[in-house]
Length: 499
Image (cartoon, rainbow, N blue to C red; front, side, top):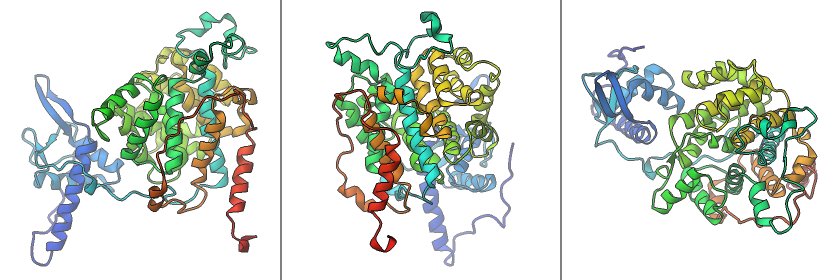
């Protein structure tokens, strides 16, 4: 697909005394765009012909798609004009015979030595966390349910995490009267194995998500460079449960790599456990995808990881805003907010909707590696209807159950509310009181518009607080107390003229 260059009427006029300021503004805009593109557009080896390879370049289609996704352009024609401006100002260069910038996957370009690096001065000012409008009370309840439901689902899946075929290990697993949640975690530990019990009761996925929930809830917003620092100190204080990618992240930060160069190559779906946190804070705003992108760049490098994160964010956002899980999945196949490539991933999961979810998970691959691992996450969203069944099917699917549990549990808990989370599961979830407090704090930031300002950041200390082990594994309060505490807080903040 190609687009012709704009006509002479549409071109930027030649520099003159009358339009010198306009030309300067155009150059500054192109400078910012070039820096942003160099930091975010993935480059690599491309082939136009079988025996010809072009190194460290990108396609015109990739550049235009990126500009549209990041709202740097409102149309393809505008994106093509900006690409031609970058080519004319030598911020990008052609790799062979291209004389103009085209929206074409066979037209290759690369950044030049004059392309500026992404520095702090080029960044846009940080927005406040409340962004456009506060979430409705119903949407806030769904966001809170998504966070709590995700962590409970992760804890319930920990016991059989890593077992490739649990139905062969436990003969009764497929019986409807058998509950696989927390299977084997209780009644087998002695009092001398408290450290081992703690390790088994929380997965690396749940631990990392809990630390980041705390960091983001205390900061009240997401900014890549700050989150990288908070995550580094949070992970470093207790690295026994970290995944391999998070350990590599710590090493890169320790060696002096800053955001986004601290990210590591990864092909797992671990990023999905972090999506409910971002969506709970930015659902219903035009900055959701931008913040998801920032979060991904803190930890991971790879287009597949980014695509999975954006698809998951869109689906969960629709559920929090009031759609059912199935409606959200149908919307995701049709929406223009997702690229064609991303929508194809969703449709691939839909092709196995005739299978039971645990069979589809095993067929796609239950180790949690992309792309099959993401298909295994999306298929239950097309097929299943309720939270307990979704968690159960995910556990029976085997493999890295916790990598899938957080997002699947978040979607169905947001759909049906806090009441669908079994109380027995809540009581067995380690650190639930702390998770509940941080989740409530995060969701409350969407109650009142303008509740966060940049000046508040100066008063905030380090986000990470090292939690000690709980003396009791049972929750000290019922889940209904969340809404009660929220209502009390809102009442106390009212001035006398509101009473």
